[in-house]
Length: 77
Image 1 (cartoon, rainbow, N blue to C red):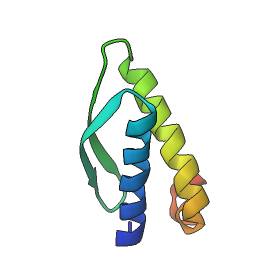
Image 2: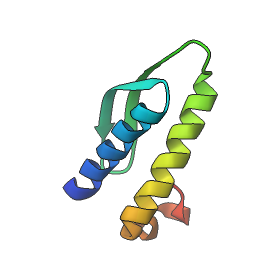
Image 3: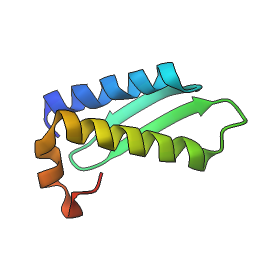
């Protein structure tokens, strides 16, 4: 991922924090994958949290950086 894409990705994650009861303690981006350390309220299951994060980040990244979709295998985030 380019620095611009990485920066946008982090910004999207910080916007997610504002809308949901989660906190990104760590966001690490590698060449082709992402690592998160997320804190949330006990009422949110890990599956629900990850589904929301994946869905929102994918939609926003494809909207803001359409070139990312072309570089991904199968066009999936």
